[in-house]
Each structure stands twice: as structure tokens, then as C-alpha cells.
Image 1 (cartoon, rainbow, N blue to C red):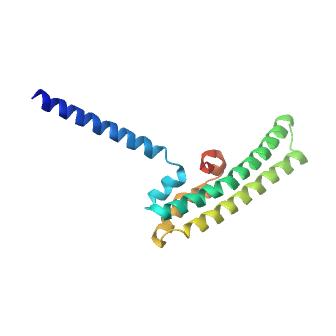
Image 2: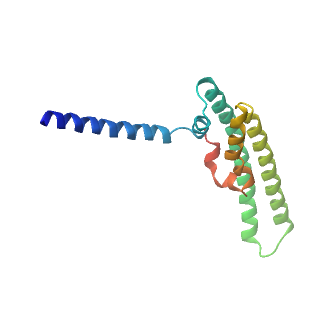
Image 3: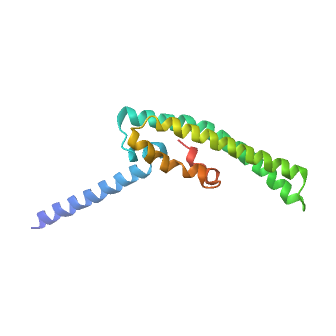
Length: 148
């Protein structure tokens, strides 16, 4: 009886450890890989999907830095002025232009990546990524979206 109890406890402990390890592996997946798996991709198709996202991540990170620089410039002007100035208006305009460029680039990327998916998964993919473009400045509020 003691031996059976010991075997059961060891088996239960092994299952718990295996579950924890599987969970940790899953949460440590890069976002593009996690998204690809969520869309049912495996093997070469998952690798192609992940590579496309990782390739774009470089351009995305560069754009985020450009937007951050303009935002910092705008913030400096605003903190040092008590009224609207031509410098503030120009910085604000540059910031909005960069955000629009970023959204165009991102949407182009999403549309290209969607072509890697089966037709029924394209819509699901676009529903998952479209909020990055349509929900205000969420795209730059979360800098994690461009890390491979």
C-alpha cells in the first residue's frame, strides 16, 4: 500500500511538473510564433509566418523610435511653453504624419502576412491584428509588439 501511494504521489508530482513546464514554454513563445500556432500553423508554414513577422519587427522598431523622438520633442516644447507655438504645431504635425505612415506600413505588412494563411484564417488574423491600427495609439503604447 505504501508503495502504491508513493507511486501515485510521484506520478501526480510528475504530472504537475510537466504541466508547469508546458505552461512556461507556452508563455515564453515569441508573439509571432504564439499567434501562428493560435491560427493553426505548424512546420514550414509556421516558420514562414514567424519569419515574416520577425522581419517586419526591425522596421517597426525603427518607426517606434522615430515616433518616440518626435513625441519627446513635442513634450519638451509643451513643457517649456505656455501657449501654442509654431514649433509645437510643427512637432505635432510631424508626430501625426509618422503615426499615419506607421499605420500604413503596419496594415500593408498585415495584409501581406494574411496571404500566407488559408482563406478562413485570414479573417481571424485580421481581427486579431487590426486593433493595433484602429485603437488610437495602442500600437506605440505597447512596445512589445515589435520584439521577435
